[in-house]
Length: 273
Ligand code: HPA
Image 1 (cartoon, helix red, strand yellow):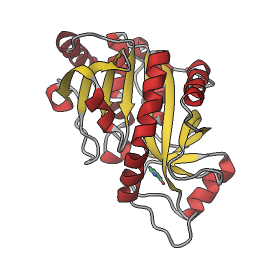
Image 2 (tube, helix red, strand yellow):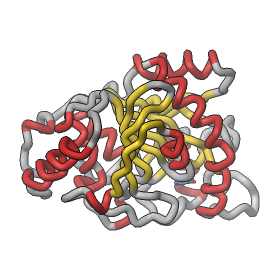
Image 3 (cartoon, protein in one colour):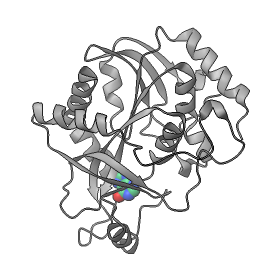
């Protein structure tokens, strides 16, 4: 397990270096990192400069923490996150969530790129995460009990805040942005899924599939952060388009194409919080 001292060192450094500690943090997934460049009055800290912080090893993830204002609201923006497929433990993947808890942040907005599993979804759709599913993947809560990060056994019936989902639906409507709402199914990757796996995921009730988010949302549920999750459907999942192969290029291209719309929705949500 990660020593408590490491969490404390990260939190102490951030308390010292950040110009403010806002209520809200926003995690920018694949292809969405550019939103951080719009932050006003920004202070930027590379993850590598934060004591105890893991490094982001994925090319499309910058690995920078930005403190600034977006849509008139102070926010912490994480450009890049940590994935289990990079070789990190579930605890490391969720490390920053617990640091946010220590800092006093209360709301966590998680975004990601995902494959569409629901046959009604199209590339470019935005999906509010209503719930998540993962079977057999590691939990960030496994191990020694740490009361600071919440109880050993904890409720997962409302991981994705009904209040924030309602607020996001309203913001989407007011801005003429269509949103789907569905279940995010976690797969550990880094390989994309097989068509057989996607058929199984659909039978189980997954609407979108991806390789991130659930460990962070689980740690947030344990320590009592309010979570909003948003996926950008960057491709239809394996086997859904005859003869098509899935690639990270395709994921990044479609994430970039949707990024302006995604950014508008996120800014509307921030303004309405
Ligand atoms: N599968 C898993 N993760 C993903 C996908 C996908 O099809 N698209 C974007 N992230």
